[in-house]
Image (cartoon, rainbow, N blue to C red; front, side):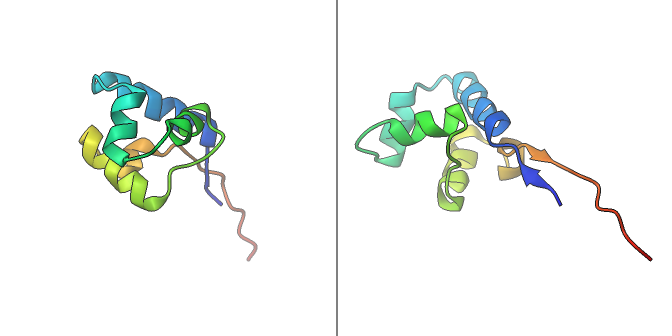
Amino acid sequence: MPTINITATGDNIKKMRKAAGLTVKDLQNIFGFGTPQAIYKWQNGTALPTVDNLVVLAAVFGCKIDDILVVNATEVQKTA
């Protein structure tokens, strides 16, 4: 079954944020968070954004959610 690579996804969020010329504080303001902790957790790979937050990130970065998430595809063996 495919799984989300949380660490690689966090690295991706950080890379995309920097490419968009945004600071953590900028994202904090966009989301209306009181503190930047959630964004740091996303970037450090200790938490994933909720689906709602992924939609906002995709809009801010001008990409699809699939471009943000890093998925490890593992082959599923079929028994006949």
